[in-house]
Amino acid sequence: MSRARRSWLRGPARKAPLAAPLALLAYVVIRGCDASVLKWLQERGTATLLRTGGADDPISFSNVFFFASLATGLAMTLVDRDNVRLQWPRLTAADRWLLTARAGLGFLVGPIGYFMALQRLTVTSQTLLSTLTLPLTAFLAWAVLREPLPPRFGLTLVLLPAGLLLSRGLALEGPPLADDTGLDPGGLAWALLSVAAFAGAGVLNRLVAGKGWTFGLTVGLSNLLAALVFGLVTLLLAGPAQFLHLRWWWLMGVLLVYTGGISVGGELMLLASYRGLGAITVALWGNAVVLVALASAHVLLGEPLGAGTLLGAGLILAGLLVAGRCGFSSARR
Figure (cartoon, rainbow, N blue to C red):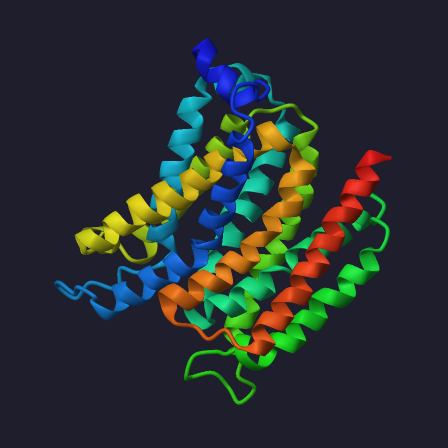
């Protein structure tokens, strides 16, 4: 890897003081549009489904995340290839099991639950439910790793459910086939599975963080492993038709917009943000993803943003900010 490339990835931000804040802003916007863009691709792909020779529905989590994981994994591994070649042979069997378990939760089970929930719930519902990942991660870290819970964290545990309940009337609306409660139970189950998987991966991330491994190993190879599994699942369950009968515009949307712009672009902006601002600041201001997600769902998908939804989202955001400030205070001690 060239000296200039290493400096951009790891060196201190010297020349452009605004680069890191702008990267964080770009990350918030990109990740906030994630669910809305994916939902739009789902709906458009299903509405204009191309069926040839009895082919199954080509819109599935397996081929979507196959392309996304493959592109992200290749990009991260190639950029950091020197470190990957250096670190991989030094891994112990326990290290490789740790990376595999983290990849299984954070790059397989979590995304599958995320995709399936989006098929049954609105983006607004999925976004608000996903905020439960933070308190669950903290609880698991306390139970498994014996990490102390931050002060005033109980306030976060009050604000998050309160925000969900307040926004429930307009935000947690299922599709027409939902039951009388207005929330599709299958979508809720998938969303909670996704939350649990991402929370478990978050706890494993804390173990990985202390290993000194670079992103090519932790992000690149994990995505390549996920791409391999998604590709095999697609071929075994649906056959090559899941790839052969995709419409070109839908495929380009997945590859260029969702994979290139959101998956790879989001990861690069996140790395640049960490480089210049640090993990605590990124975690604190990264909570604005919730607001961008609600706005993008309203603009792209026409999902309503009533007073209850906005007030509930405000309580949720307040809970996330309290958690972030608690973490900042703990870190300063």
